[in-house]
Image 1 (tube, rainbow, N blue to C red):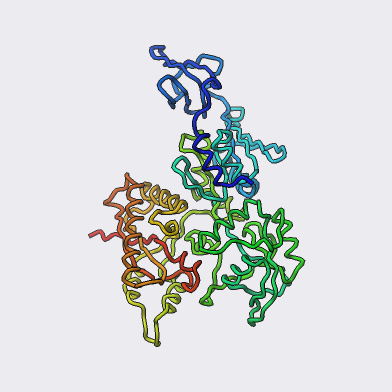
Image 2 (tube, rainbow, N blue to C red; image 1 turned 30 degrees about the vertical axis):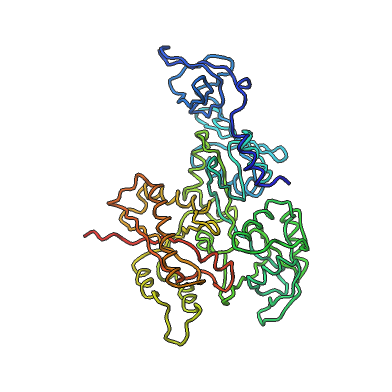
Length: 512
């Protein structure tokens, strides 16, 4: 199957405009006729015209312009046509209900007609007497959607895999998570994360999964090797330092097939997306320190659950049609939350918690290596706990690509969203503190310096992304506390990977 790496390789050639001979000749003129411009029409989104001219490619506001020529669109009252293609789970389970909620919020009527993998949606203004946007939604795969995007065959790609490339812009539509599922009457009460990783590598394994610690021989069930879900799971495992998946697991062409197989076998364990788990029970995950690892909404938003799976929309860095921009803005707003949750996903909007919600983190801090005796406390724990009492924590968290000082793709999406919120006044009257943490490997002083540098890097990226920030209303600062407040057990690489992060804490500004 064509991989996502092929998409990046092809982008260098496919992103160039098509041959001018394929364009449609038009002449645009001002209302009084004093200015005219001729060229090949590339696209019209209901608001702007993209034209290839002797001066290069130009984007022009269509308002007040006259158009002549065989390629002229209807510049007022026309139907804007847009195309969206990509991962089936997003196209079939998330996009339609969100589109319906958008139409309702806009006071538009939504009708749809399905033809195989393609669904045509018409959004109509009842008062105007007809459709104003026709959206063609095709359910395929992440790779096919990205290929269609770079070849100019779709306006928006739906993907389970982030793509870091300067020619693309990522949007996080919702959050999901891979979870272990078992038969309701099965023998599996819980599974340690490390044992789950062993099972993923071997396909079958005898591991302690009962509450009394007894072992059981488990068979792993996964989606087909060439499925988008399998690729996304592999990418997530790689991000937390896990090994590749075994070819000995039982493979299934659909989530429904996987769920049916697991439901029949008391010693089967499936790994599937939380939104597709159906009525199967989720086996609780336990970390190497014996503490629970749960896919709760806050944990997904903060990247604290190791198998979190964002659902992405990807666009080229060019102007989208107006209605499609409005749809993406709606999805990024709390107004879309109910529709996203009803579809079985987690809205990506930030949540907030205070010191009362930090119990597990404090417990993990007290279990750090090298602490001996009932009165032993890690250096700096009092300082960080004092700061916690003065602040609230946003669920936003930022991480870096493995072995680099480069902020990863999903974190950059989060930084842009936080910057928009700051510029919109959401955090007025607060100091936004970027707080860095590391794992517990190495020297404590070196870790603290590293955490401070990474927090400063995120602070600088946020400052750059929010040029309209009113410094009198929102102050930016940074701090680093090294290995304190781990969100996962440092005994495993996946836990250490999660612990290397920069969080967002908010402290009210002193009016004095």
